[in-house]
Length: 202
Image (cartoon, rainbow, N blue to C red; front, top):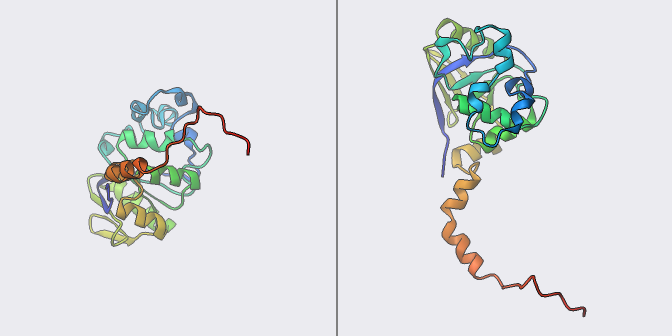
């Protein structure tokens, strides 16, 4: 199963509170048939307003995979397209002050850890990434720490989601694939019911 113990790479800071899912991926993109092309449209309206100065457009943050946000990230509509757009852009983990509950759950179902830090630590991490975008950054779910270069802080994550990520049980499709023989054996022992035959009144 797909166990997630660490996420390593580079960070990308996105400053601002209450960034909702409509800003992450506008409602007009909900008509897509698959999620495959959503990455290029992540934050598309914000990026247009910032004329190339949005972090997702800046060359120094291309290829980053750990998003660092502030308070109440992912609020608003419960659309699963929001974490899908972030994942298709390349995000594999998110550090923030807090997350909207449904957004958090949608990320967990995709294996994207959403871990929290105190506001002061978030500000420090964002500033470090602005100053040194190439700094190696790691989320360690076993030790519950985040590091950026020589800077390190303790993370917070509820024990239930943490165990799901570490154990791979977040991945329901993977669990089904791993247990396909047991599923077939169970199905073969189930009684046959002919649903086309009307039930008789007793």
